[in-house]
Image (cartoon, rainbow, N blue to C red; front, side):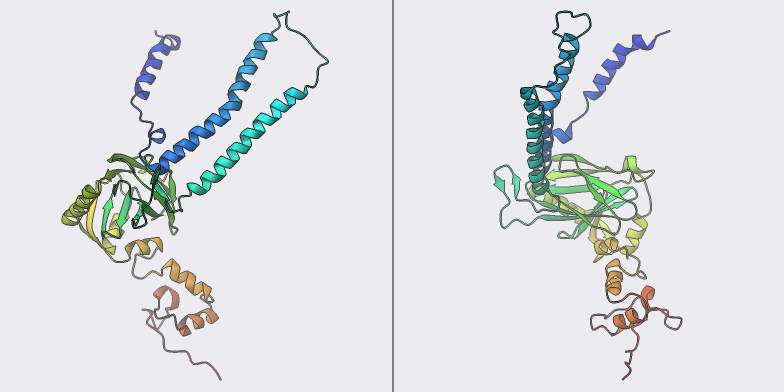
Length: 345
């Protein structure tokens, strides 16, 4: 019978063979933001190794030099202080911490995902006449939905953008918390229902890249992947036209069907989208009889659902709409605009 000891060599070779097929995308990205994040990782690691490596070497050296069998090692039982050693032991880590702190503070502001890009590559600032490509992202169970408001199209599990053009992602989720992550493009950003997060990024090389969900969200999480295409400006225009010529219409009813949990969905394309659909998803009011969160918060800001708040909402000059969920009564089931409330003299 083969023992584990005899299998160590073959298992090690097998592991090396499998790892040889891995692509270290995070350390070899194709977008400027991801490249800056990679550089931050490398510089921070090197700075920390300036302390870690000498400590490891000295630990091994001391253990060898002062081993029990080495009778030539000098034994000083009463030694307890050295000013030179104290300076080295405390000054070196302190300088490293100062350098890491300054580097982290600067990078935190420079690489803020909410901050519009100042450049698309090293030495190549964003031109004044270039507008970012806006992409609205919705994390569904278990698939990704992308809106292109400027182009008027939408896709499922497929994303594309022109190279060297800033991309402004607006990200939300339909049900549970998720995470939007294209390793070649930029770091991961969380997607949360009822909230909108943002990410500014750019892709600098044409190609096909992998996008994933980086936060566990249930049974279909492992198949929640999509393809991100970095295209030239001409090819991106062709991609948009392909979507418009082959896609269908994404209505609110179609979205409610798409929103239902499903796994490993194929790519879908939509040539047109119902007006205000992304905003309705964000405010959780895709259904026609549901009050939007932003309207609900506006009601709360004017006093809530009590008698004073109801009077304020009805009598407000800014309130030109009523809601079943807000002001319905037993005699007014549709939430029709109520008659003006007379105020006592």
